[in-house]
Every structure is written in C-alpha cells, then in structure tokens.
Length: 371
Ligand SMILES: Cc1ncc(COP(=O)(O)O)c(C=O)c1O
Image (cartoon, rainbow, N blue to C red; front, top):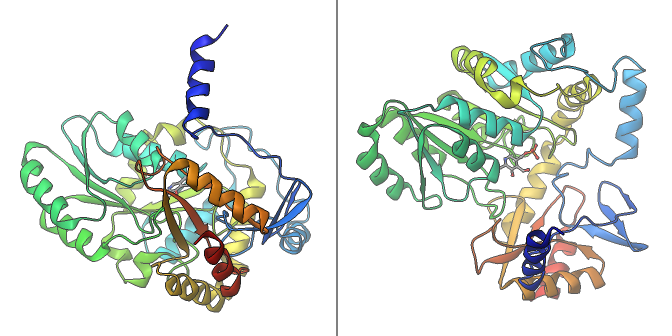
C-alpha cells in the first residue's frame, strides 16, 4: 500500500534529502538537549533569547496573571478578537509610523495571504529568486503573472521591469530584507528607487530583521531610514520576538484590502490572546533593552563575513553537508544541513545563526571544526 509514497521517501533518503523531526529533550535560550547531550544551538531563530527562557516566561506569567486565555476560538472577523489584538496593531502603527497594521497567524500566513491577494489577474509580481517558500506559495495562488529575478541583482530586475511592466496593470516588487538562507541583505535603496521610477508596490519581508536591525528593532528599513517609502512591511513574532505570529503594516487602503481579501487571514482561527499579549509585552518591555546586545551580535556576524546574524557556510553536496553537521554534533554544537530545494542544487550548507547568547569564540571554534 502507498507504494508511490514509500518509493519517493526512499528516493529522498538516497539523495540525503529525507527530513525527520528530532527528539529534543529540552531547550533553553542557548542550548538544545539531544540524546542526553547538551549542545550549543546554532540553528535557532531565537536571536534575542526570548523564547525557551524560563525567567522571561515566569515574569510574563506573573505580569499577565491569568488575564489572557489560551484560545481565541474563532477567526478575527468573526468573534476571535479582543482589545489586546487592536492594542498590538496600534503599537505597531506607532512604531513604524504607518496608518494601519494587521496581525497574521504566522509569517507563512502573511506571505501567502498578501502575495495571493494584492496581485490579481492582469497584474504582475517581481520576486527575488531566493525569496522564502511562503512568498512563492502566495504568488502561485495569485492569478497574477510572476517573474523571479536573479538574487539581489538590481540590474536584472530593472531590465525585467522595463521589458514587462507595461504589459500589466499593477506591479508588485517583493523581497526579503535579510535573506533567510544566505544572511545577505537586499539593496533596499535601489528597490525603493525602482518602485518609484516604475510605479510599483514594494512589499518587504523583514522576518529575520524585525527585532534585530534598527535603533528600535524595526528592521533593515529602519537602519536605512526607508520605512516610509515601503508600501507593506512584514515582520514575524516567531523569531527574534520569541513568540508566534506576524504582521503587515502599511497604508490604510492596502491593509483594509488585506483584511477583506487575504484568505489566510479570513479563514483561520486567530492566535491565542496570551500569545498576542506576550508579543506586545516583549516589544514594549524587553526589546528596547537589547540594542547593545544586538549590535554586538551583528558585529560578530560581520567578523565572519556576513552582513547579518546569519552566517552561511557553503559545503556543496548533500552528503558532505550532513557529515559536517555530524562533526559539529560530536563536538557539542547543533546545526542542521540546509539542502535543496530550500537552497539551490550544489550549495548545500550549514546555516549558523547567531543569538545574543553565543560568543565569538564559540562561532570561531565551530567554523574551525568544519574547515
Ligand atoms: C523570510 C521568511 N518569511 C516568512 C517566514 C515564515 O514565518 P513563520 O515561521 O512565522 O511562518 C520565514 C521562516 O520561517 C522566513 O524565513
């Protein structure tokens, strides 16, 4: 039975593409326990150490004192909403100086909902080749035509726009700010310039930058003083914020449109009130105290040749990459091999993600082991 599926699973195993869920015993803000071994977690998006942190969890539970429930029981547009959701959206509007904000259940929901609904038949989307799977899935669900331009290649993007823009009604450019697998940063200045020159809507996914970059942690758009110029900024709460969910901020018309058209928002039960309250509490009380730690983390990234806190160590083949992971594992580090289709064929890699808890020496040692 299910012969087709077991055959495909065997294929995946032969090509070292097979994925399985690990049996971790325990986690804290820096470590992960596997098979009784305590390992430094180099594979976490818990950049500021707010998740898996018993002190923070305890402090928040004391603060919230039973006020928030663990289930919303409904979608936002039905009965799944309370003042705390609006309070978080208002806070985000104030921080970004944008008219409106909308919370989504995850970054995946946000990208699927936004990219599938903003562009409709007769429109076009220009998307960076290395944009996250959720952006690709959103574009696939949209009735618009989409083109993927070579990664961060602004000349190629402009040529593509010149060739295609006038064949369509509305045009959207979509990019990540910090690219999740390469840790490099989009040329935001040029993206803004192109968007203005060719009358496009610019969507920026700051999933890995929200909480990490910028004076107030708003992202790369804050560092470059470009928040005002970007039509829709997306950020996630599941990474640096240590919570769950995502948001989009932008012009009132666009956000109202998403509220009415983004199916991943409309047809899914809202996040639990306690998650929303935790996100808001972290952003208001903990994030403002992280500037020094974040700056230090980014300077460690720079020392190892990255523009961000994500350091890619490209190995090449799948098998060698898995072997390198095992070497790190035997020496007290946890990383996962990143393989196609997540990254292009032949560029399998270790993706070392820094957190504010990890020291320069620990990263230096890990890289020496791999080399
Ligand atoms: C760039 C980017 N956008 C969106 C997501 C999805 O966010 P979430 O995990 O909240 O669904 C991720 C990773 O998970 C990502 O790397």
